[in-house]
Structures are given as C-alpha cells and as structure tokens.
Amino acid sequence: KRIVKESQSVNGMDQAELDCELRTLEEKLKCGQISAEEKLELQGNLFRKRFDSLPEEVKTLFRQVKFGKDKEVKELLSFKPSLVKDAVDPAGNTLLHIAAREGHKRIVKELLRHQAWFDINARNEAGKTALELAQALNYGEVAEYLQSKLEAAR
Image 1 (tube, rainbow, N blue to C red):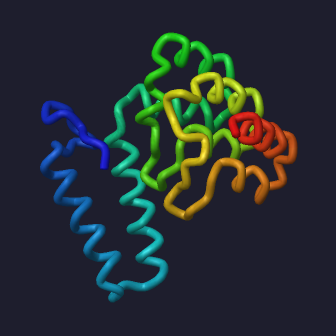
Image 2 (cartoon, rainbow, N blue to C red; image 1 turned 90 degrees about the horizontal axis):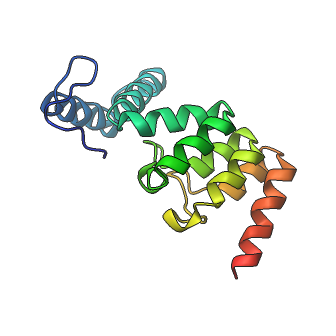
C-alpha cells in the first residue's frame, strides 16, 4: 500500500480516513456476502482510492505511459529516473507492464534504459510479466523486443 503524507488528502480524505475506507472495502470483498456486480464495483473503488494515494509524479508517469506519451516519459525519467522504482499500481503493474499491455514499444525501450531501477521479470497480482501481457495481447514487436532483452541479460 502506498503511503500519502499525513498532511495530504485524497478526494477530501486524510490518510487515516483513507486507510479505514480501504480496510472496509477489503473486508467486504473477503466476506463473500456481496453480489458479483457489487464486488466489481468495490474492487474498482478500491483500485481508484489506492491509485489516488500514489505520489502525483508517479500518477502522471502512469498516465503518460498508458497513453503513449513517449517524449514526456523520456523527459520525466531523464529528470528523475528513480520514479520507475516506486511505480507500481494497485494491481501490481509496473510501468513496463502498462507499456507492454498498451503496445508502446518506444516507451518499453525507454523504460528498459532504466532497468537498474526495477525487475524486468516482475509479476503483477494476476501473476503476469510484461512479456506475457504483450504476448497475450498480440503485441508481437513489443514481445519480441522484451524477449531479446531477457535473453541478452542471461
């Protein structure tokens, strides 16, 4: 779980309120006494609240990666490459997962220039690596590039 400084608030909630809300949502999900539709809605709310608690720079970087803003990603990482290290969304996706899932080869390349800051083999909460996501979504060029980098690292 990402930590928000006590002085910050997320959607008008301070950190203690956010933690309480997250615990409540997690308990409701675990109890199994809610409908599948309610469960999906609660999971979405929980994801949004956790994402909102990430540092602003990290949220911006995730958005830039998702929407293929390769120049902006490159600029931000040249200024602060350590952002890659802490950039993990509530579903366990790294920036590399997001770039691979969206088929953004230029961003995948840029992220791999900062490979020292993260694990290229990291698995998200669904147990998938960035390579597996690219393969599953038929982003052949991205998958081939990731595979070549993995083989070169061996």
